[in-house]
Length: 322
Image 1 (cartoon, rainbow, N blue to C red):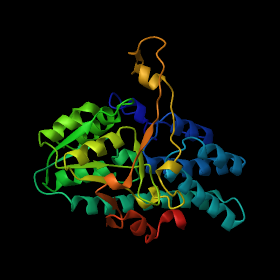
Image 2 (image 1 turned 90 degrees about the horizontal axis):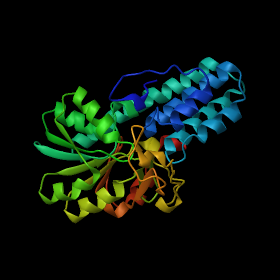
Image 3 (image 1 turned 30 degrees about the horizontal axis):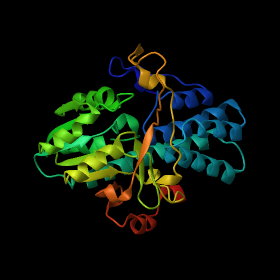
Image 4 (image 1 turned 90 degrees about the vertical axis):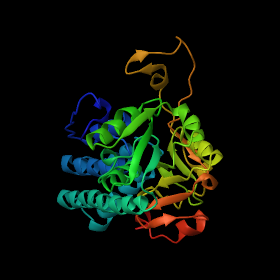
């Protein structure tokens, strides 16, 4: 697996041999991005089966590695269903299920990207938060995949990338990935989006998500809610790219979503260098909730969903429900 923590300085691949290493990679964000987390967890179950480990314990451990992304539970539920239906532990069969989940994500993200590109006009300037590219999924990515495809089709004028504090996924990962693809982009500090929109430099905001509640509320990287408020204030369309695996009909609204809180060092240190005053107290939620009324559209593999989202989402046949 690609160790995303090492980017952009080095491209380093990890060889994970046991499920505990997969869980640790997810917890430490060596692998991140909701679809990639789910796929990694599925392969973690395969490793547990191959080693003869207790599968319920392994699945429980993998499920607890990160709480907010619904894709994690979705993938593990699919693996549990495969185990229950077979009545025995067949490593090859489980590997087939995990590979199927990965291929399914590859296909659905491409369909999502095609729907997303259809919303963009030639010469568009798009603002993106965090990182939602190919290395965060099993395919071409979600929101960043839309941006890359818009460039490839001659539609994109420029991409603005929030640096995305505290872990700098925008500056480190999104800029690296778009740079590899030759997409013109500029990194900005998270607080610059308001001035940028006031100057008329943004035509649309595109972000990803870790969970969509049944009413259309969205959990995504911290700072997304702020960005949605700024976009609404300036009349800029705000789109959320949401693969079906991230839609959670069992969660009624954003208030019911568990928000992961992470260690203080992510705020007090940057790349290992302390930048905060010694002893400063911190609060480090990894995600926030953007209410449905601030979202212009949900871009999915099924098409672009418009309000009211509760009705639109309830009509979908989701992979979570299979």
